[in-house]
Amino acid sequence: MWNLIYILDLTGTFVFAISGALSGIEKKYDIFGILFLAFITAIGGGTTRDILLGITPVSWMNNIIYLYVIIAAVVVTFFTKTKIMKWRKTLFLFDSIGLGVFTVAGIKKTLELGLSWEVAIMMGVISATLGGVLRDVFNNDKPLILHKEIYATACFAGALLIMIASYLGIPVVISVPVSIITVILIRIFAVKYEWTLPVIKE
Image (cartoon, rainbow, N blue to C red; front, side, top):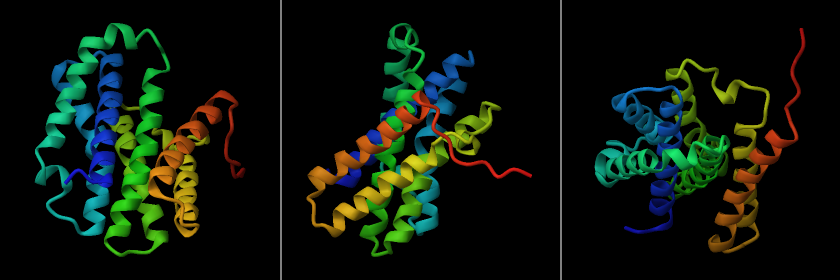
């Protein structure tokens, strides 16, 4: 059971739950609001992916550990909020880690079903971005994916990298962490150096 996809899924769930919980704390929500944001941020992308792939019940419904991971993430966030909230970039960091992990997890899960690389890349991007979109919508914020800054494009780059690595026969123990790190670094550099995609003008 402790295969690569499962570990990646749990890791992505944990870091995205922290991201959601942190955003709830920043918005000064009560404990229910924080738990709700942690939950939808953590499972939003994976749930959408599983439904599109015809996997029902979806992963977290078949395995209660996902719920415990989300609760654990909220507890960790609550008891360490004084320290981590001092670093303004904490939410951004956990969001970036979640993007990288869920991109790879979505790809791997799709390929295991025998679907094409094109579909796998789409599922990877959906897995990585939809949770954050739901978090932003419920926070009444403009979703990051609609900003001109690099967001989903970072996931797409990481997805292409793992596809190329697969064709070249590079072992997953190398390609997976490299792809995850690539997504994270692209997000960090994109924000730091204000990289943006072209905007179509009227």
